[in-house]
Length: 140
Image (spheres, rainbow, N blue to C red):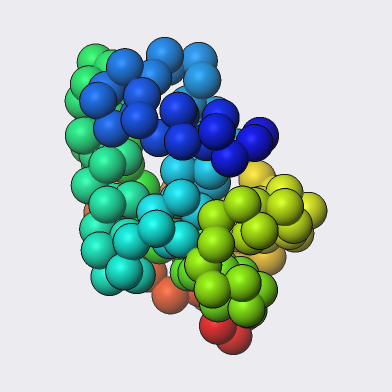
């Protein structure tokens, strides 16, 4: 995904016009990286969290105890993205940071299961609130 493609994706996401089939695992990461590079980090975290909730509703979804927004997964991946952005030393220049982004191990779908048991990660409590990992600590 190129920088112009990410910019368009984020715009469509923000206005609730991104087709559901384009809201992929990769799209989640592209959106989060965009905000982490272009907004102050506290604002980026809120934009990511609130943006996902708003988008889910815009496509007819819900944010419930069993579907939609998942706090622990969102915060877990966002922390890794922030760490990556800070470690690149690229001054949060989106195009530069994007170049090496897609090769990062933490982008794999099963990556959180290195830190969380499936039972904990899929729990109602983890969906609603940030929970610390139960298999190994985060070293971020």
